Length: 253
Length: 284
Image 1 (cartoon, rainbow over the protein chains, first blue to last red):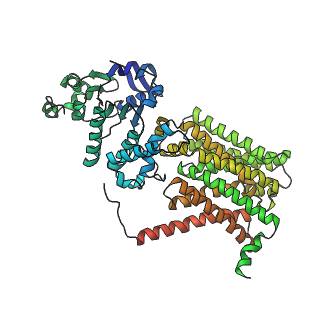
Image 2 (spheres, chains in turn red, yellow):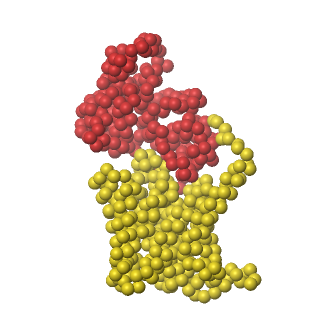
């Protein structure tokens, strides 16, 4: 079985700050992988390294058995809170259409296939009626659906999402969650970061992160009480033991 | 005086017509490039740039060489200077721009103070010499305008992706660093191509004024460029008419109009929004 990600002593550094200490792990080509850990634990850095946006300081990282930068064309990445300047006059349709740029390049006109892909993605995300709106005229959840639609238009084998459901309204969260499940069924791998234990339990593979990859494997093996106490710190868990126990025999949807 | 004559008389003579053509060409290239400048929030950079070329032009005046060549060299020094301060220190980019801005401006004044007709030379560099534009200047300016506008249109996708989000631009294969460099070159080229007609100080007025006004009116970037080009053209034309009848400085009058138009349009947009009642954006 080919691996989605293979990491051997990977270190990620910004200047003198180490975001991720030497981590060795792998991710098989499974449906969904969750990267879970506390705030500032290096989850986003890890995802950015997978996408080839952040170079690794040392170690070797292979994505789809290629260098991350070379594999970039095979991924689609939904960034966390994509900050778009309020002044940029860009409509929902145009923003979703950006996803077709790798395919059409600098000058080729959008063909029927690209237009259909844009319309289809907007339809699936339930934003067709907003197509002529400006990005800054939308709610946070609607905007996030635009970014997911954009990523769907982009040709990809792997979909990366950085905290796709954090802080969203119910409709938006449900729409995006449904898509994640559909993508898994379409033999496309999904890799997402999350704070949410339930979300991580629903995945096929989990990376538990806090400044380094502490554990990896199927959720039942990784999300043990022992591991979570290490990841989140003993003190932090005090008082929400019930929260952990409640979910230990959670069903996987 | 009949109304028609009031509009026609300012353009009766050849030098007046050349001033109009030079101003319109400057307005067109500045509004297309200025649209991206405004969208990327690079106004301060544009401001610094229009002053940064002064020592090059001043040196060209002193040495009696082509001022466009001098301006191009100064523009290159400016970009290299800003980039190296950026890379080698932790100072924010506006400090780097500010340093080069004041340094180049001061150097320009130092150089030009060597010229006997000091004040006159400085004034014509800063405020342009719209009525002294020659036909060969115009030909050169027109060629530059065509190249600049074509480049800005051809690079629409990388520029839009960059204005959207730099990381996303990279993920989409739109090479944001190269796109940014290309934008700097286009800004420099439009300053160099326009300063003879409207002066270095007032090129900035055309780079920022019409696109800023257009952003109040347009919902897409191509529309914004069209609005900006229209506003710039009308500003140049009406500015020259006013300066003729009021006896005011031509390029300053041209630069003043887009700024006045901005505030008029802003007031209009606000009033219309107030009248149209507070219809909120519905959720979902």
